[in-house]
Length: 174
Image 1 (cartoon, rainbow, N blue to C red):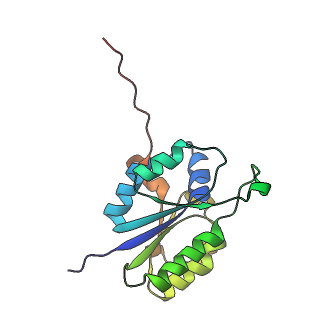
Image 2 (cartoon, rainbow, N blue to C red):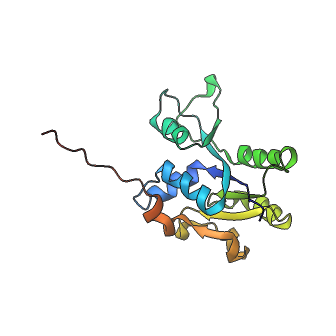
């Protein structure tokens, strides 16, 4: 039996925005373990826009969970609190991996909800390179994905009990 090796590409804005609307947060370590066990993810690329302040605890948690963090950087003279669209960066990285590393992995898992990736998803299906598209939240998934076969779709809300971040209560000193 040949060991499958897959890559994951995660749109942080979609993942964070739609899980927090359901009042829960993903534990990066649990999520990374789930991706490795369930989808044989060797490398997981986590795309997010660069937050201005240093030492962001999110960056540390992602690195501890073995995510490869890819930032959408802001030019110094354009720094704002506005969100930066990372969709084109994510698509570029997927295509770059397909061209340059195509022998190093088998399939791709995409984590997002918006329809901006539909053309990429259709291409990956045609080339037999899509393992799964994981949508953070069932009710907010783009209607553009209705035509995608069910075997390519799953919803993270179905996994909440496996990947949710739970604060641990501190033990009182005796």
